[in-house]
Image (cartoon, rainbow, N blue to C red; front, side, top):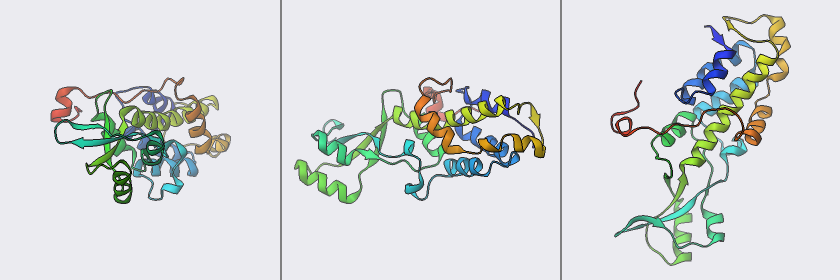
Length: 221
């Protein structure tokens, strides 16, 4: 299978290319370069983290807000204080890239995704605020988008580093000399930590918002 670092880097900057479609190509490239750690990170990003303790920090303790279901008005902000928000309205997102991306695609800008509270947390919070209504955590679309942009940015930075070492053009395989030249770049943590720090300034694409017809009939293509 042929793959190109140049093309991979370009794809990270194209909102028309979903991250769920980019990651398998990145895995192929990492495998060809014998970047075992990078390939392993990409696979678990794609599949999801079975063990949340092994998830990177950009997936952990993500801030949301508590909402309550009103029979009259639907979902509305719950009457919680700052401490209750801090205790109950933060989530870890361990799902695979495709699931997270579909959640993000399904949200309009300014909206979010409701996630059910843990049963014990629900009972505890209902008691604290003296409210029997259904409660949930609402995570904004931007929280999902930022997580996905961070993973995309890590792939962008890895590709950029490979290009700086002269690994460019289409390849069906890489020579031992080429692999040796970039073996020091087999460090996913280096790139996702850099991505966390620089995601707002890197030229990576955000998750686009689906149009009405795409939401009704499914994504085109």
